[in-house]
Length: 236
Image 1 (cartoon, rainbow, N blue to C red):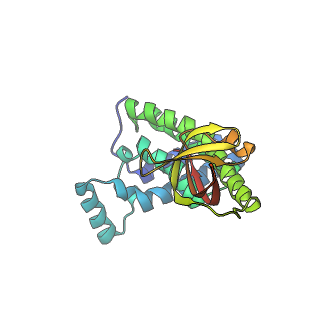
Image 2 (image 1 turned 180 degrees about the vertical axis):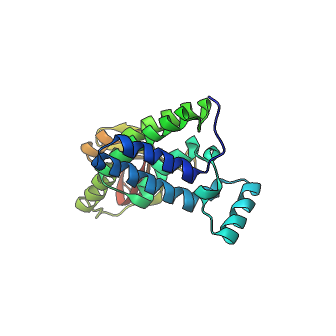
Image 3 (image 1 turned 90 degrees about the vertical axis):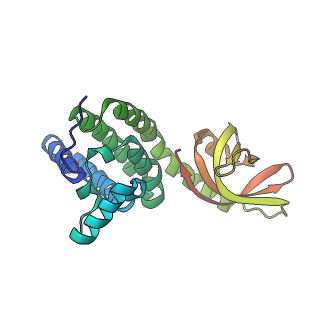
C-alpha cells in the first residue's frame, strides 16, 4: 500500500480519534482518547531518542524556535513498529503501570490504530505486518505482566530471605526456562550469565513466559536462588 506522508503525527492521531468518536459510545471512546493521550506523551518525550542526526537537528531547531513537539514535526514515517512496541512494552509498563483494565484497553486501541494506519495509507505493508504481529502479542501480554509484577512483589514480602547467602545479583533478567515453582534466568546485559532455579510460587511460574524480562535482586542459598527484591516485569 502506498503511504501518505504529508500530514503530521498530531494531525493523523486527531483524524483517528475523530473517526472513532463518530462510531463509538462515549464510554468506549474515552478509552481510545486516554490511550492516544498516553501515546502522545510517549512520542513527545521519548520519540526524539531514535532520530538520526539530520532529524535531531531539525527537531531541536523547531522545538527551540517555535516550541513545536515531536508529533507536530514528524509524519507517519515515525509511527513505526518499533515506536509502537516501545510504547507498549516499555512506556506503559514502566511509566504508567496502569490497571489490568487500562492495559487491556491500550492493547485493543493500539491494535485498532495499527490497522487503521495501514488502511489509510499511513503505514506501508511491510511495516504493518511487523507492527500487527507485535501488537497482537503485546495485547495479550500487557495485562499479564502487571499482574505478575504484583504477584512477585507480594511473594517476596511473604517469603523474606532470612538465611545467609553465598552470592547475589541485581539485574534485569530474561526468563529462559520455566518449571512449576521455578524460573531460570539470564542476565539481560551479559549473555550467557545464568542463574537458577529461582524459587517462586507455582502461580507465578504458571503466568510467566519465556522471553519476558524481570528486574530482580536474587541471592543464592544452597542449591537454589531466592528473590530479595523485585521490580518490573516487561513483555519483551
